[in-house]
Image 1 (tube, rainbow, N blue to C red):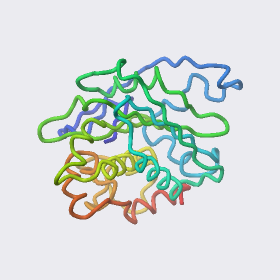
Image 2 (cartoon, helix red, strand yellow; image 1 turned 90 degrees about the vertical axis):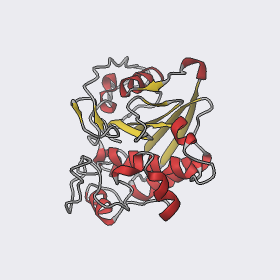
Image 3 (cartoon, rainbow, N blue to C red; image 1 turned 30 degrees about the vertical axis):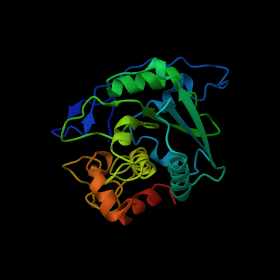
Length: 266
């Protein structure tokens, strides 16, 4: 799912939402950023897709810091983290590498019945530790201990991208839909959703990485028309379960790969 904090638009599909702007104050720390390169952390508070080229190319940043925060008991599988790092290494031109940092958050601080995107952004404001510096661009995942507030009986959201370097997974929902009889493995489901949300901040589809060929699903904005592609809209909802059992993990199709490469990626 792609959400944008700076534009208000609610589609007829509950799994795809654009929410109003959040004017959240950042408490910049001069010790962390002595030259005020990322004053008030504004480089990490842009629209989804705004940093696509910075993430894909080595033009400005030659290193990525990947921060994953999770509510205790809802951490990603080790295989999931390894899969995401490998995916990034395959697609991002970062000669100085990708550093992964996992940080648990105390369960006692959370326990919400459901999260809005505003709730998630507020958690990021309070707990996120890694921000973009002159040496590295930082991205952030939050693994939530509950469901998305816009879920319905017919549509359960598994993940959202809501800022240029910020994403969240609804790990409780993922756990409920994986690991059991007739369900995909938990690491498989986590992997697909993390890669899909990362695809949005890399500018897919038509979201900061210019399309080389038109493959934009206008009925499910910023998703791919190819039903077998990682960026197909159904990947970020519970609808993906049957596809994972039938055809396995989806990958980026050639059109999406062409878009990323044209914008500085591999």
